[in-house]
Image (cartoon, rainbow, N blue to C red; front, side):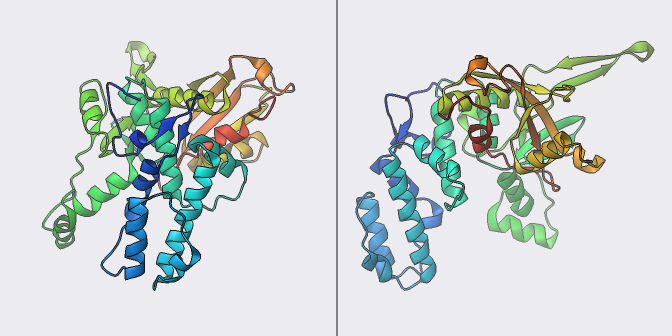
Length: 356
């Protein structure tokens, strides 16, 4: 599982094993890593029973836990937290791999697992399928599948920044509680120190990928004004949207075993538009409305960051009624400029000839 760039070293990936298919097998070490997450950390108010259970699980992460062990806890919230974690742990181990568990959970319809655990699985699975990745833009784009992004326009560019990181800087200026107090008093002005990922910062990304502090430039096409009213449009080779496209191609191939090609697009001009998939809740609703010829107002349309065309390398792997037709994808922000990609959408909603 080695990589010349050991990015996201804190995602638990190194505590996992691969099966012959290349899917990730949960281990005691990985469950121990999950248990060490902040959501399950002991606090000063933890009772003796909770402390004893936590310490015993840290020593033997796969041990059986009796109902009496949970009932002995004084705090009802703590009991519920451990109950949820243990159900998650047991279902994950029973599935055999992270991928099998994820597919079963998403195909089941009712997702009753906290988002923090799902995001942790997605990050580990992405780290696995990007194990040979040498493109910092692709790795940064992959973060969009498990960490919400805030998108802003700056100097004609469309930049995506990690929402949690941006919010932290806005609240504390990166200086913790002292920064929060200084900001509230007016003694300090918010200062965002995030860098746009580019050729000159690639090396820094690999060294500092755990801080999620790099902005991803999603600008796909640049327009240059020429003389005599002419304009020249140029596609950026290192567009964050192209990086995201490559990640999504790997994601589909890894789970579904089919090869697809994805490219950013500006509009859908296909009179025979047959199939679309939104990569998030907002774009799903928007594409549904456009497909059904329902009006979409200008403010809402402006939240559509990009469209994509997805084509199957082998049309025989598609449903017969749409074989050979492109699948259109959409990516949009919420009203407050946040992108929350739902990577399961591509696994559940592609027009496959047969369920994988």
